[in-house]
Length: 361
Image (cartoon, rainbow, N blue to C red; front, top):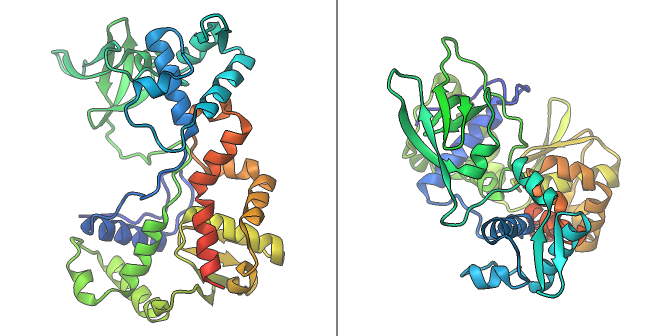
């Protein structure tokens, strides 16, 4: 495995190459140990809503028991009342009309407008597909098949990644999307316009692991280091490793800031840093494994009386900020407010953050 720890993030913003280095090491460590996925899945009500819309595309209506009769294994959080609440709100927004005599919800013109905007798509077997044809060479070559609903949303000039390569859309017709491979003589910095996913606690804890595990385990990782990476990684292991043998956050002054090493993941550190800011009145910043403060903070004192209600109140006060921090599906804003809160709470893993904070008492 080769990696570059750049001075810039893909967004174009200044980066912390040492943070990149340690996160990379952590991801490789997770991969070698088959430990990458969350054990607990968020309550993605917006994904459930996407499936309701897909059913309506397929059958031109939705029954109250549609998901339960068509999906073999639904997540535990899916309840009949939640589905009815979703459908009722979409009626209020003019997306569906309710046929009381048949107990069915039927799509309106706004439903089809949302579909054309790419807010949802069909994903049920039997949906028609469009062929992606590469016209880069003299002979046109079909390289992929994509859902026709997705193809409808593509326009000439758009860049998409298909078959592992960036391609420029040149033409879209009823049956095919015509593309050419996007080539550049000079490398360009890729820019991503969607919000990045929070770094999970799994990876943050793996940073702690790679700083503390024995040397022979580090040597066995399939990584080739340049001189800078080898030197900086060795420095972090010797500087921080010995202090991480206790399971409570440790802190130190660095470059005029008080750094708390929590290894809690992005979401938990956002919440903890906001608590610190509100309770202590200091400026804070956070990544997946550290919280930076403008004054010395003992986090054990701040979290000893924290309960779930405190975290929910914090989330409510900073609701719009957390929506900006999270990459939520496009149908999220069409959910009832109560389901929006449940989804965000589960994505942020509020209960896990509370458990972690209580262990530091």
